[in-house]
Length: 306
Image 1 (spheres, one colour):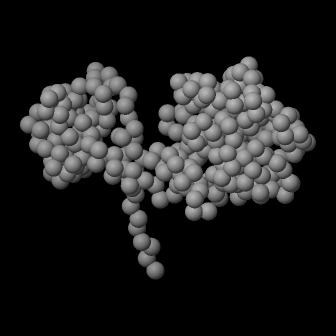
Image 2 (tube, rainbow, N blue to C red; image 1 turned 135 degrees about the horizontal axis):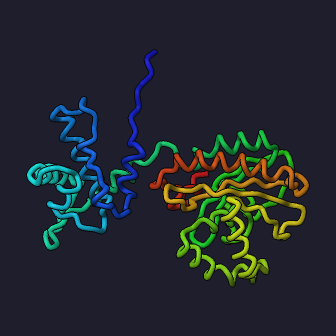
Image 3 (spheres, rainbow, N blue to C red; image 1 turned 120 degrees about the horizontal axis):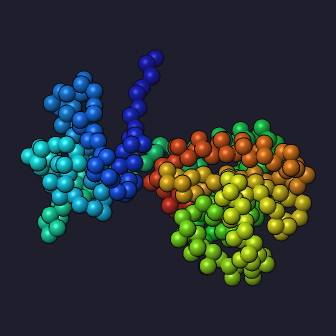
């Protein structure tokens, strides 16, 4: 029986949407000038040039995107650029700001990407990894994601040893800064976001767990240096854990892969071995993270059907 082919939007499509970096115009190589000669049919050329324009618009999302700017950056003539832009406007992928005389990606373009998404959300991607790791390591594995100023347990695979955790079962929440999983996320947030979380959570952390700012900031520095969180706070006697961040394309933590176990099973000899295993899995997951994954944007809603 012949296998059915399935077509998906590529990672490059999402990179167009997420790209906001400024482009050095003197180093920018127009994609339309560097493609293989086999793509020179009229239909392919028009399609390729249209995507050149979409990439150029994304690269200078907050910059100059007048007709002449786009023509110069893509290596197209102004007449060709105008013709292609009109086609993209007709398809509602591009908008024209008459007052500023500039072009920009449309809301419909972003909506298209959000609807298409990824056939496997983060929880689906991580589920087989959690199962495999818990069977291999003989410990309990967790998937945590940020939810405002807290972290929520999105999934869990039970190991043979009975343990206690800050989040408890799937859907449980913990203050960002408590436990290895939430600390791994907090440490790799953008600085402005991290500072906002710290300012908001410090009173909660002290009132509920007697964790002060000195501890939180020293732990963040350690996690960023090592690439994982493992320090025990002593809040759960006899328990230990280690967590690594799952990063997006900009190096921002969107989730954490965490292992919980009894303290004697995470001795100094085993700790770096487990850390390396979790880091490798996190890197693999980072390449597959869909930036429009509704699980990341609304983790609580994604748990409602469980």
